[in-house]
Image (cartoon, rainbow, N blue to C red; front, side, top):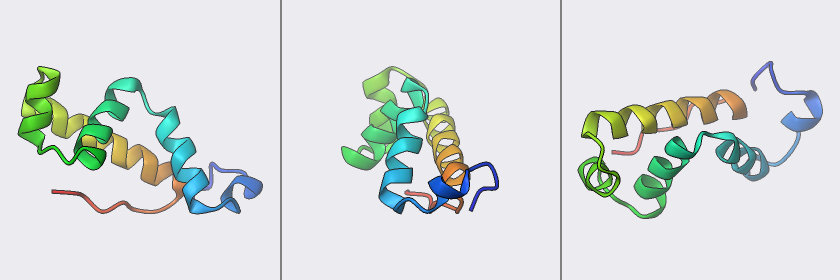
Length: 80
């Protein structure tokens, strides 16, 4: 668990902590996360939809996953 989180928050179900962490992401990261994980778009497809480079989509996605993992206190598996 992340030492940043109060004990009461660490006891919340993972789903609640995960949802809260996603809501706190910057909109640009949330959008990339949604396109990749919920809509199932590839990096290139998401880049095209957002008019971004594939590298920028990858960076936003990685940063979002790292932020969420840090907040919920564990690593998240990278989705190809």
